[in-house]
Image 1 (cartoon, rainbow, N blue to C red):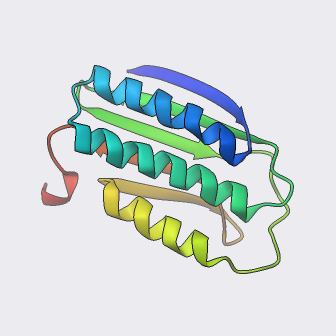
Image 2 (tube, one colour):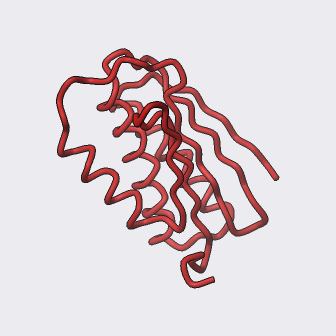
Length: 131
């Protein structure tokens, strides 16, 4: 299994770097254009969710794990963030829906009911939902 890690400032404008990295890795594995787009959307939505969730977030950590030759697992985390914003954000609800809709498997790491990280799995050429 290969592992690629990036650390980005927790600002929406840096999510482009996450999207480009995601696309490059998925392309290398032979993902279709639609699968690449789905994975890019899921990774950027997860990052934006965490950015919107915390008021003290400074860094996003994204780890990509190449599993076999047809699976990518991406872990998007806000390791040092702790101060949750006071308001409920409808954008975060939409982000959760989008992430779950375009991936094969999503796991949320929570502390006291607050999502601190996402683990997203996407397969090339198929879906785990039918297995």
